[in-house]
Image (cartoon, rainbow, N blue to C red; front, side, top):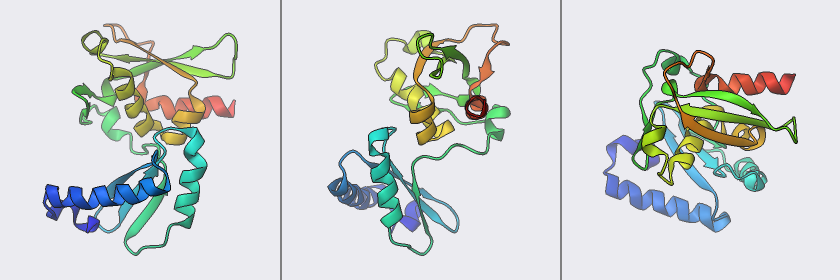
Length: 190
């Protein structure tokens, strides 16, 4: 059924997706899944929604999952590997509860925690911060974008705190957000 995502009516697809989510929630109500339908192989991603206390549950579920022809079962959101669309500025905006953000238009600066030097913090700069700063979903929207960009495990394990601010006119000292994963990897090596 899910291999034909693009050919099935939305209401029928929702019925089957709801059944699948219900089965997953019988195992653990805090896990979710994402289905990606590619040309030859479809993928089911089991996610802990960034909750590190559920990582073992996700890993065990994926380890014990049956092998199904034409399906790939993946633990966690994986880091984005093709950054070209962000580098070229032709990425599509990600919509989240009426908040529209493009990763190519987002920047960051690393922040230090003076009490614990090993904790990496980041300040994320977005164009529309002034417009959305009172929206209760803004922080969540930024988190979702970062999690999709650097991967679920890195988001949970490598970033200790996040601040959000307005992107001002002069941002030559800022780092493009799409470079966050390589920055984290460099910091971990050092």
